[in-house]
Length: 169
Image (cartoon, rainbow, N blue to C red; front, side, top):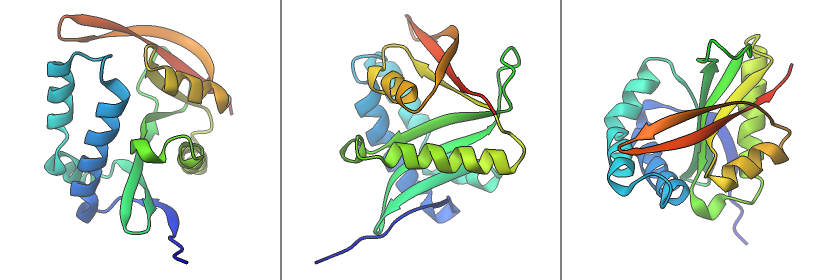
């Protein structure tokens, strides 16, 4: 019987291509039918291996979930970017390859990011999700997120509602 190690670790520059591939798969699964196809392709294509390598080089906090030799998910996080929301940290993204969703991997990645933020003194946090992305909205509610703000974002000619979920210190 084969046993594969599941680990969450910091991204390295050598991971850039695998992160780009994971990003592509996860975003297509999450946003197909929500973000217009042309706009979705533009967003995905901007985040190729060079973009990820640059983000890692610049010190972005990017954690990966690795299953055996495969990168199956990533999260990036840091200080809260929304000045109108009084939370210390923000999880900018948390994505998994579709076949790893619903298995507890997202919870593990969220917990690791939250722990890392707290160790840096960023004890409360916020995450934004498109309201039409029901799996994400349901996930954030299930892990204790409380809806605290709404906004919108334009994708080409389509404007989509988004909601901020927060966790207090």
